[in-house]
Length: 69
Image: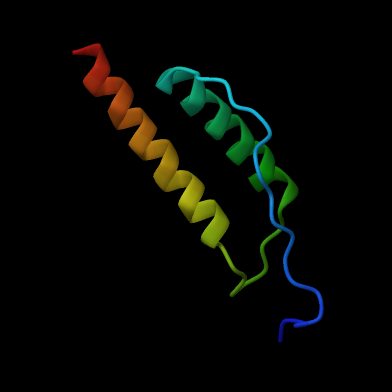
């Protein structure tokens, strides 16, 4: 159970820079590859982070395809 006395850290971006969908896709894929290489998921572990990153990668890939037409 979560410890109520220590809430999760809230992150806020201090600045942002626009990048292309293709560049974003490359970064997400590189991060996902590195994340999966470092993770050793045991049976029944929480894979929600990996699944969400894969969904983001697929969406960016579809956007790149739409932009190239």
